[in-house]
Picture 1 (cartoon, each protein chain N blue to C red):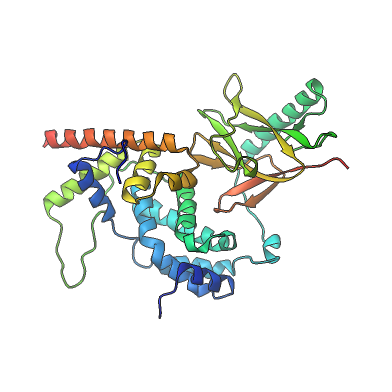
Picture 2: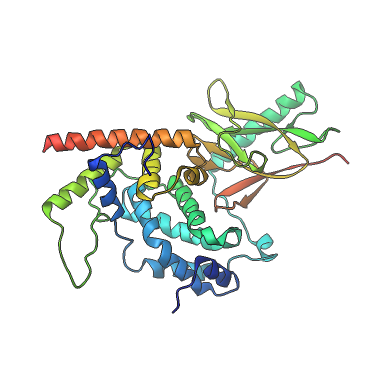
Length: 186
Length: 183
């Protein structure tokens, strides 16, 4: 059912009908996929999933640059605010939650949002704030002790894991997520 | 072979019947290719993205928590994959055949020159859209996805998606009108 934003007319409707007619991939596609499936072995199940290696592809320069920025953020935070935490070095004060700082280098981005289980993976709930040159994006989020998966969404389109995160996992939909562990007070 | 549901296929694949994954490939291949083709603008990138998405789905199959909605779960993988595809090329100028429906063997009818011109026009118009508008337009109007599901697929709010669809429709309408006047 068209909405007030759809505004279809006969030309558009004809275009949509034509687009729906598109044919499938070339011959042999299924066979090529299944050949790769066979080569992949069985999908990880049960405890074997824990042993399955996870591969992240990142540019080394991006890792170095982000790691340097995170290190600067950690040092700066330690100097300015005693007790603050970052996404990669998290220690909790006596309070039940810790403020975790998430930092990512995303020069040229118009907006960057943080998503994770703590905000129901809502791409609009937790925007990051850009530095003056809009190269580094930062947000601080209070998180309870425990393990939290998260990622960044750049310009509302690109799902980007944290290249400086010490741990990553395959997300529910196949895209990789980063993991931060907030240590509770003993 | 009796047709099995996606849910049953997933159960059997996870139980060790790896070849049953072929059922899922065959069932969801065409729709996935159609979306990837129109978004990425060329068959080669579309096939690569689709193949990688199926492989990712196979490896992550255990994480498909609602097997009855495998199609939506797989489509999200595909949408993400298409976003990170590194081989996007302009649609204009490409000699692609994705919009040519393969004729069945018994009735070999070739598209007319007008048909081909029309298909080239719409492919060119689609290629001129910003990629986020193209994505939203294809999901909404070609794939028939509702806005709430689009939100889950893309991670973008409903309001933003509606605006992208509107702007895409406005731009396409204008381009199609210009093409009519140019003929």
